[in-house]
Image (tube, rainbow, N blue to C red):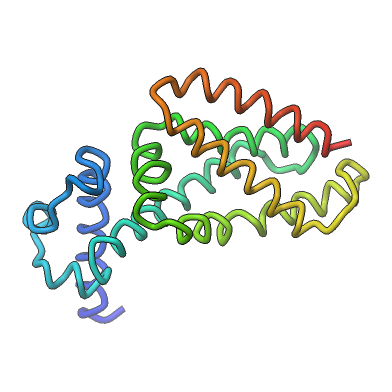
Length: 192
């Protein structure tokens, strides 16, 4: 990496860290780009050069959080793919909606600002791992027959919609409990 690339990477990292904090504490609408840039110690031009603007910066923060959620899901599922680890991994995704930072940035501001792009981000990171797990479970005779991609899209859609529903209220614990119970029931029927 040359000096210019290194400087750009450092600026991007500063902006991401600062934006993540600001988007969590003040929300997307309450975050001033001038104040955020001043706090990060960069120019507004650097923000536009690296992320194209405030919306691009939010997308980058969501991608970072999505990657972290993916890592948590890998840990929740363990090394083997079986019925219970699959269900636990899907339920772990719902737990992300309980995290105040994830709730605000990804599940509240994300849909309001990014719309369909949020769903695209989620699918890009989730459908293939789900497809792989479903295909492996099908090979074991432990998941309903059908196109593994289609089933992965359906399971993924249920997971993100449930997480959005959990995040969209004050009583997240109650909704999380209801969504987790329903998700477990649905997945238990898919996993034979």
